[in-house]
Image: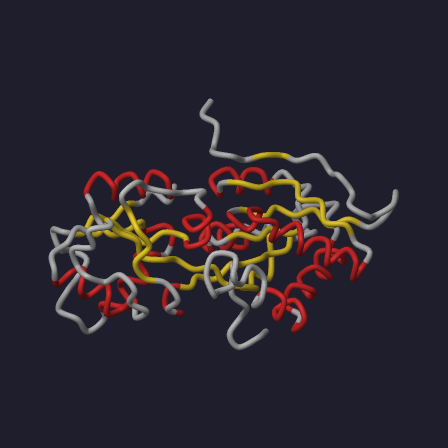
Length: 272
């Protein structure tokens, strides 16, 4: 049986909560587990509420629907809105809402044939890439295709150009390898690229910092009518905490100056 990438069921290791303390069980999918972000946020929540976050699943989104439907997860947070909305449509989850934003960056071969390095206007940069007829790789399931379509609205350029390769795969290392093989520009998650989690020899960061490159990270709470044993109150407390003004301000500062002058992630605009 094929194993999906990096799905892990983790041991519950209390941070400061004592025996019998209330617990919220979370599936936190994607890069928010890297660079201490989710663990730092979990500590803040526990110190504020006395509720321990048990992160029971991390990793790739592919195995999450089946795992979530078995129960034992109170709150799910991930970037892929299609997965969350399908769980909601099938009655397993409720109240899907964005609580922060991640972002992509445009990277490309160090030779920079389209001459876009250092630009802060992603729309202008994409149009320069297409105008220069440089190869461009887009992975559709990360939302990169939606960003490019929004940029190209009203433009003569389109995604049917022979220089554009659209991939359904959202495994960023595989997408990046296709871009390397084609010596193409592509959009990739900024923080994993800057941290070295995903990298490519001979490639450089080209464009970052434009709000159009941001993508929402959603949460949803398990539906107790479909999944008995849900820790509903604790999940609602965590959602309220994530939406709070104090947490949103903390998100807007976390990681600034680590790699660049931007935080790792972005608060809601305007705040929830």
